[in-house]
Image (cartoon, rainbow, N blue to C red; front, side, top):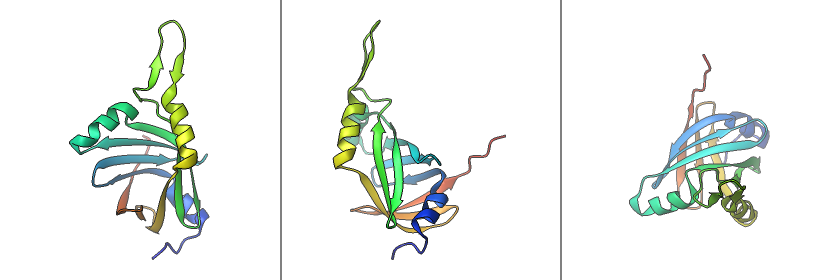
Length: 139
């Protein structure tokens, strides 16, 4: 049951900020029109918390849709424990290097089953995920 929308239509509908939950995480992701994204992941299972401490809970990268599959390529882990700051020297972004190399081999991808301007249904290898658009009005 794949989406009836074209890849470009899916990309346009995805633009903006979305919230969704999986079995182990609460996730907010903002898809930007320059094909980059910012994601926050909060681990809800106790045994997943050590992973959050190492990687951090913020991720940025690039995204695109091809044949109704949403691809997320992580490029930066700005709050990772592995991004070390040496006083009076420079910042070593070990986590960012690992994320960039890792995304070459392990891109996150999700089949887009349904999408409209306020909800989406995507599926990864294990589960279906329902997302809700967050209104991002500026006052």
